[in-house]
Amino acid sequence: MYKVFYNQRTVFFTENNNSYIDQDDSDVHFFENKELLNEGLNIFLNNPLLNKLYIIHKDVDFAFTEFTKLYQIIEAAGGLVKNTKGEILVIYRRNFWDLPKGKIEENELPNIAAIREVEEECGITDLEILNLLNISYHTYKINGESILKRTYWYEMVYNGIQIPKPQIEEEITEAKWLNTNNLQEIINNTFPSIIEVLQKGKIVSSD
Image (cartoon, rainbow, N blue to C red):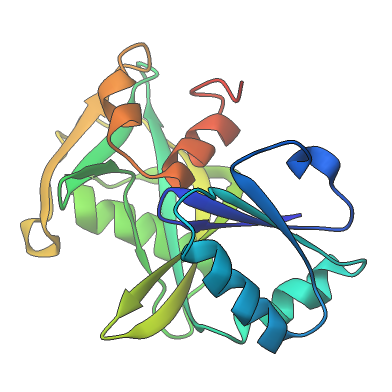
């Protein structure tokens, strides 16, 4: 299954999922081709009562690949970083709490990009990747062009003592370590894709 975030709304690609049945805020689209899918997406996005769209096809990979042709793809990488106290590294950017991440440069591997972006955005070094935690997708527009961002999220550890320093030129106004028992402020003012990463990292419950 694939999941794509449209701000606070979600599109799912699945073979056969009945979870949308009896959900007043959900709709379903049986994939035939990308042109009809684009129409279905516009109907979904123009209906403020709908929060979830389930796209059904026996070959989910094919349907999702056709979907991606409707967008310009941008790839990014970032990290869910923990220190020796079990705290996680968070940033505040453009009025939202976030995790450090950024665009992958040409010919750069996602894991290398993830470490570089955390170092640049938070001013700490000597990071160690434990594993690939999640790959998230979300959409937005730049100058009227539809963008689909694919972000590789890595679980990392930091054993140093450097104090995080926000990268101001990237509009990051705060970077800090946060106790995982004190995340309500973050959860109340972040993106669904970030909450999903926190769930994958078992920082917050997926219930």
